[in-house]
Length: 89
View 1 (cartoon, one colour):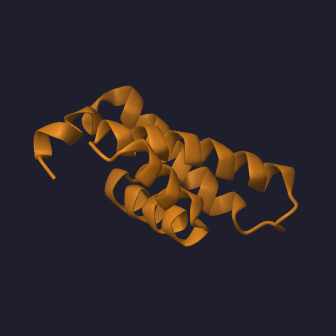
View 2 (view 1 turned 60 degrees about the horizontal axis):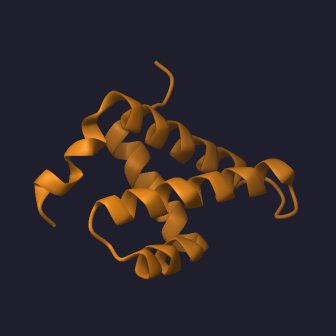
């Protein structure tokens, strides 16, 4: 991956949004599967992650397929959280 294609990651708004949505997914994923908060966190993270992957050069269909796998979404959220740090500081 070309590093220039992920330059937007360091912008303030993207940084805050990725950190927040990753943190939310990791917190609410621990709730029961039928929890509204869990579903909202999963849906919000899915939309943001797909948009991010498309902007990084991944075709939309591949990005959606990747993010539809809950294990991939959790791993991506964990990696984003470990790189970007806590959403609230």
